[in-house]
Amino acid sequence: MVYIESQSYGVNTYHAYLLCPLDEHVLDQVRADWRLGAVDRPNDERYTSPSSKLVIHDRPEFYGKSPQEIRTQLEVEALFEKMKEDCCPTSFPTDSFVLLDEDTGPTESIWYIGSWLDEDELEGGPDYFWDGVVREGEERVLWRLRAKTWELPLIIINYEISNMAIQEDILNASPNVFREDRKYDQKAPQNPVEITGRKHFERERPRISPTVIAEAGEWEETDSEEVRTRFYISSTSRAVRLKRDLSAKLGLQEGWVSAENGRQEGLPEGAIRFHAPLDLEAKPIKW
Image (cartoon, rainbow, N blue to C red; front, top):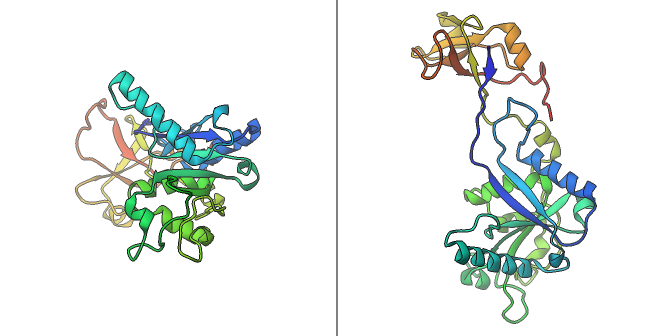
């Protein structure tokens, strides 16, 4: 029986905290928008693991607190857990987190809270596009960014691999945060960052083609050089495809694809494993 092989990868979990009471429909929309941006399609077997998950915590003691106060509290909790268990805590990571406020529903956006500014960043100067920061006394300063909820999963990935910088996103969306005197103001209002738009993610396809395992009689093979040329299949690979009725049933394209030569490990005689691209017209995404 032909089927799509399940593939799971490590998924990062990010934690969100409420700054005020929010209706359940707002929280549901946040969860749905995060799933959209993380390409999380749990009801469609053709999709692999999402890029991340979001867990929302309703902690009334955080209502009305500043991002600095919340980060400090989370760091204290993480340190306590580390001392208690003598290991690195995982339930409350403090490298970055998310905040939801009264504007989350109307603006479809949330806050990303990044790291504390280091000494060089606090001073700014020629190597930066800001000269110092706005703060009261020795107040600690955070990087923070307001973004459309569906944009944030990909934004965070780009920050983690140093493909993008939070400072540039802030400057592009809300130049007022870096004032006329070139000082960074962490408390200044921000416009939500929107890079690609909701419709882009609604069209988003899996990052790789699903892995299909087909038994004898469910697939076919060809030695045609014309097929190899047309579908870019090398001479060292087999040119195979599912039978058409099975491709349509699984929502996969009918074209020829490459497969490893020889007997594939872990499969019965006559079975084969290969990647097959989706056909979203024949079988739309199941959310």
